[in-house]
Length: 534
Image (cartoon, rainbow, N blue to C red; front, side, top):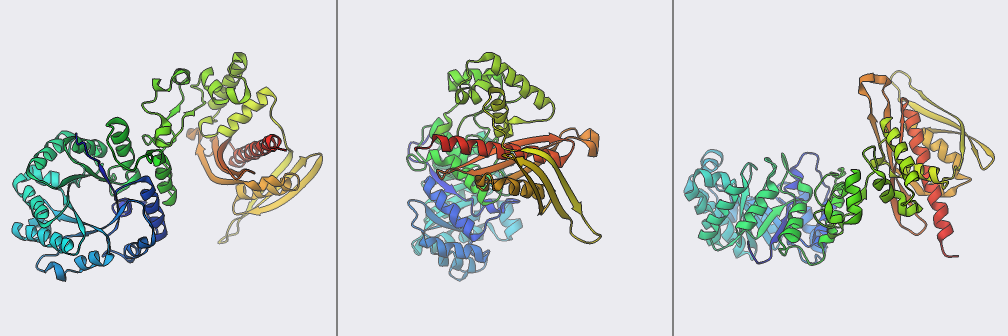
């Protein structure tokens, strides 16, 4: 195991964007680069300057950012066959990017050299050496990516070594061994890295892909064998099954192997950066992602919760705070009283009231049997508890609502909702239009409440999900509606919460979730106001 610092090389902005559904604007790339620098990565690969104007613009604009420690790298291929490196457009684009680091990818495989490039083995070695020398002569640090190295080493180790030596002798500071197809096994990666380490003097790096679900394992095997430079992407985004996920990689290096990477104290920002990349790319975070997923430290089984309440190490391999995450106690039909006590007991001072905890648990179990799902609707769960202990406030009563959707042949559907409420002893009859029936119903409800509760403007619906519960009933099936909201608190903080509704009627399920959302928000507004300094 190496004792020096492990360099972290991020290629989210280049290799990551080759993944299906992962797209970034220029502004997105600049924002993510800042976050990566704050996290403490050593290198940020910004893109391939010859491939598109966006990457060219990135290299121009990133110069204005005062990055604390990360070096920006431009990526490109070795020179073309039959042309001097000085005359190659790709080489010119790399130099024009004016980055301190240039990453060059070259062929390691005899098969790829002769069949794909269509050049001799000797010409490929010259292409590697010429390209590296040109970049070094221009004052650039050169990182050499040996494409398909492990497949090449398996087929013709002698030639695979020659390609690495051509880059090293020309001045490359890092030789990166790439498992480009993602199919190598950890033991083979380890053996190969050890063999290369014995015959080279440059720093060794590893670049793995996840096609066999072994990208992180292979990277750790390479580090154990002597590599001290690791390439990957945040959240493992990338082509096919993705690149190696830097998130669990750096957590494992620091927390399990006690190796130095990133900057001191930045590991606690790992969850924040992971979610920031998802949000920027408009992707949903993976709940089960190790270390940083919202479910990574979530406990559902009653036995587990009971143990974790006594000592978190019983079912947690590291502290969630170490990576900026938090523990979550889930409530479901699998829960025990320990779950209810942990979730709501201390907040409402009922953690030792076993009969009450049992009553709440039985209600949860009955409702989940009917299709409710409180894991994703913690606000609705809290309201359930409040109703049992007498700390629930009803802000309005519904007399009736009506929703209509009209559509003429060839036209757009028009939605309108009418609600008749009683609020603070007054009748409120409101009509509103919307982009759809749920939006129209929400608009009508908000209008009816806003004169009485102006703070209703501080809650915003951010996500809306519908799930069919019993699909065998086809269009008569029950549906579960879960909405996620953000509430802007008076102290400037922002909270997110989820509510739920279940019905055979999608509009009524939506109504239930909306009512829970507004009740939850208004209850908390009242309690926060009462607790504020006078």
